[in-house]
Image 1: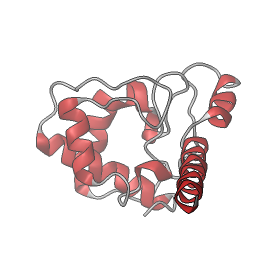
Image 2: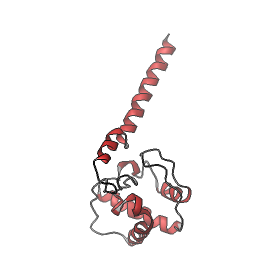
Image 3: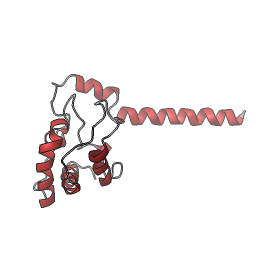
Image 4: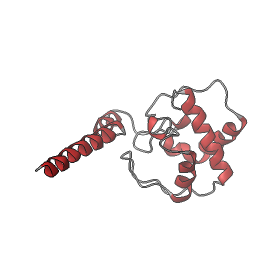
Length: 146
């Protein structure tokens, strides 16, 4: 009997944790918020840092050329197109710098948001992705995401 109770309690805790992660990572509430925005509208307000490092400036150019169509100007996301990268989901402790390189090389299966999967991106070197990552990290830092 105690074993069944322990299993039931573990299942309840797992369900609660899954609900919390889903609802805080772009679940139904976020979908409702996106529905009232114009298609392509920014999904978050991004505070810009006073200045960007040289590496981040190079990354911004690459980001604007390849990533901004979906992830928006200054990585603010675009309604119906792609998530904001200036978001706690993408903080370094959850998505390390290598995750950006892997996403560009291999694409990403949709798992945090309801935008669909991201295909691999062509025409970006590892150096480009390093710059893009530095740009996103500096934007995140300016917005309290460390």
